[in-house]
Image (cartoon, rainbow, N blue to C red):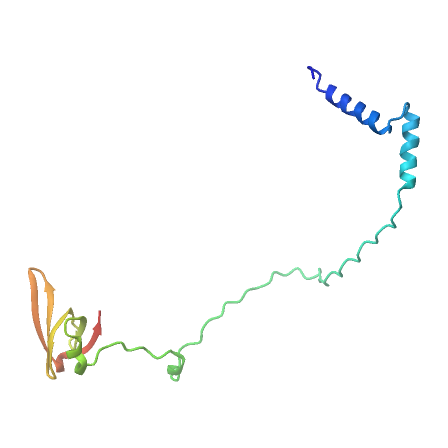
Length: 153
C-alpha cells in the first residue's frame, strides 16, 4: 500500500460500500438513512434510578472531639490469688532423681546457689553431679537437706 497511511482506510471503506450498498451519494442521503435506522430501532423506556438509601442522622451541631479514656487496673487486693493462673511446677522431686541419672538439671540450694550439671548418681540421702568449671569437670555431692529445687534442663 504506499506511503499514505490513510490509503488503507479509504480502500476498506470503498470495499464496504461496494459490498453492502449502504453508502449514499450525498450527505443528505446519509442523514436520511441514519434517521430511518434510528426510527426502526425499538425504543426502550428509560430505567428509573434506584432510590438512594437514607443517610444516617448526624448532628452537625456538636463540634466536640471524642475522648478516649485509658483504663487502669485496680490495685492488687488481699483476695486476688484466684485471679492468677496456678504456677506450673516442672521441678523434679528429690526421690525421683535416681530415674534421671545422666540427664542435665539445674539444682538450686538453700543458700540460693545454682548448679547446672549432669546427675551421675542419686540415692535417698544425696545426689552426685558433674559440673563443668574452668579447667575441667567438678564433682559435687549435695545432701537432700541442701537442695531447694531441681529443674530439668
